[in-house]
Amino acid sequence: MGIRLQNGVCIMFKRRVLALAAAAACASGTFAAAATVPVESFPVYVDSAVDNYGLGGGVKFAGLSVNGTNAGYSPNDFGNLAFREKIFTATSPDPADPLTGYWSSSESYSLTNAGFLNGGLQLGYDLNQSGQGRIRMGIVQISVMIDDIVVWELAPNTYDTFERIVLNPNSTECATCEQTQKPLGSGVDAVLYIPTRVIVAAGEAAAGGPVVFNGNSELTFRWKQSVVSSSAGADQWALLGTNNPSTTFLQPNDPLTAPQIPLPATAALLPVGLLGLFAVRRRRASA
Figure 1 (tube, rainbow, N blue to C red):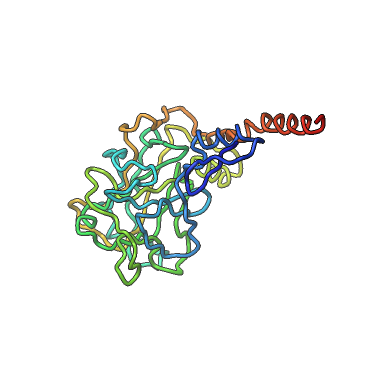
Figure 2: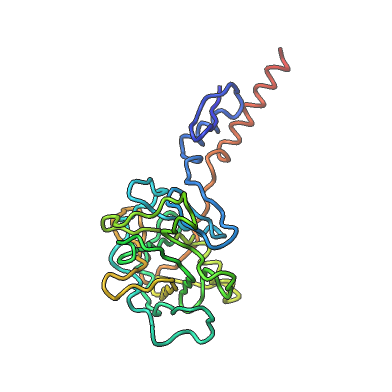
């Protein structure tokens, strides 16, 4: 008798070999991870009923809703420290950028202020003023930098479509999309998740060798969006706060390192399964 997953539920099946490994996989939640829909083209019309949209390399974007499970993200985990849309540089557009619109200002915080959770950096998109009226909002570009090294970008140097990610799409764009529901208490409306390993690898690639980001490093986050709110209650990207005890923070001289990928429970129990298979064959041979 063993265990397997069917429609998200662990059920029993009649097989002896590797039963322990399958049981451990179900018990450990190996199969319980939120589903990710890979993004193959833009624009993406965000449906908050979708757990995650995969942007490549493990980077994910998730729209949240009031009554949804929110793919394990907690809207209220995000604190008051944020990159603010209300300080867009309306008088100094990027002259090399053919798109209409402006980058947010290059606001920076040290990495000691950035919370890491579930093996990555999480930034919560708070649709303040535009979210109150459920206004259609398009994210055009995103650039994340540490110590002036670009560690991740959305739509770098590509202009095949003006908007890349659209929240609260209209009915002609996506008639079935479940829109984000604002307000979410004091929480955020969407989450951008960037794995730590992506950040570390991007730094090493840019420098042509090992780069040691640490708590003293400067994190800069800037973006463009299709609707610019007024200065009162404008949109922002918030860093994780201290509400979740699992959130970790760097000390000033702590290096940022990619977490080790743990050995899956199934792999750890593989020798047990092989011994079981050997025992079964031995009994049959002696019968």
